[in-house]
Amino acid sequence: MKHLQPSHRIHHLGVGAGIYKNLRYLIATIVIVVLPFLFFLVFSKVASLSTKDLFVDLFISMARLFFSYIIAVTLGWLMAVKFYKGKGSAVALPFFDVMQSFPTFALLPLLSLVWGKSEFTIMFFLVITIIWPIFFTIVSQLKLLKSEWQEMITIYKISGWHYFRYYLWPASLPGLITGSIIGLGEGWEALVATEIIVDHPIGLGNFFKNNSNQGIITAVGIFGLLLLIFCINKLIWLPLLEWSHRRSEE
Image 1 (cartoon, rainbow, N blue to C red):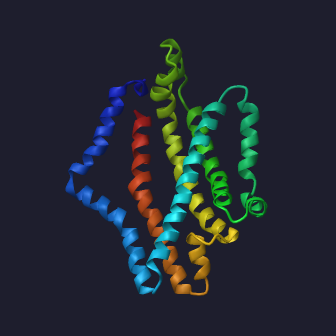
Image 2 (tube, rainbow, N blue to C red):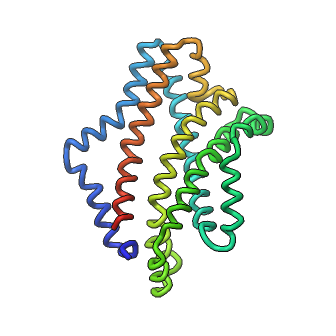
Image 3 (spheres, one colour):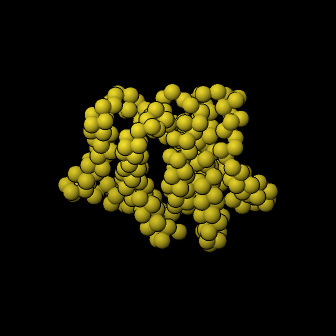
């Protein structure tokens, strides 16, 4: 069972870092990082927008999504490893399935009424949007594990930190990455919509709301957001997804 071999993991991490010895990869990475922010800078100048306000809206929205993702991925992973098997899963999984099917936007007016135009309202909504794809893809991944692996864990009496590091974490990683891509895709959509509905004065929702009567600016702003999402996926998530699939096939 190769997940139990630390040297195997180190080897692959070394290969991943080694691509940056190639100058082309390094230049391409820098371009991908800089491109969306350069686009927004030029866009603000051409459209006569406040560069400071635009970047504040952008970074505040990105921070909201980032911290909401951290909360969602932590809770989603803990819930998945707790309930993917055993007696509790017979009750928990159908319940969580109903929860993910519930139209979350129906909760937004209630959340706004209780917590107002606050960061908590937006981030709470983002967490419940992002968490379900992460939770269910990890559960699906763990359910596909070969029974021989669990038998080897039992035979060698692996537990505690070693069980987490060499079995549970690497086994759940492909599902976590796939669920993160899906969850963040839904999270970006929910982020802008939530900021508009909640009417928060700072964020991309505020930008799109203030420029809703200017079709060209709105369209170019949407293109810039899509460019940012594409670059993040290209730089972070797609390489991680490919790497995790290679590990799972070994």
